[in-house]
Image: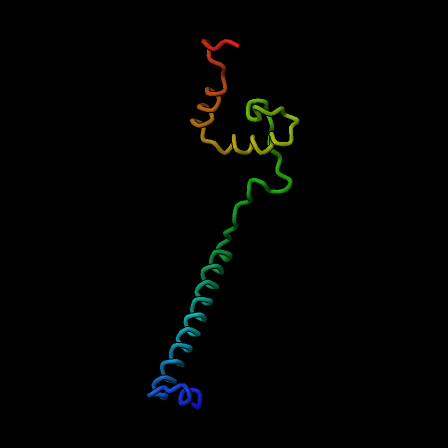
Length: 109
């Protein structure tokens, strides 16, 4: 324990005991956490759990209609993203969006 004596530590044996106690405890907790997550994630995989595919998955066909693509045309590249957002709305939100898009009867060009 020359480093403890050189550093002027009064109780080098106590210092070493505390230091190694902390190191061993942290190592044990790391192994315990790894085992816990292996069991948890292994349990999900073993039960047949699979994450859902994201909406932007490759090969997914989004139906692009003028209703969902507004203000873009159905052939516009950005219409795909707009339609994805439109289809993720609840039916009430979709109705609200469609009402907001309709020109009011009192508005004149």
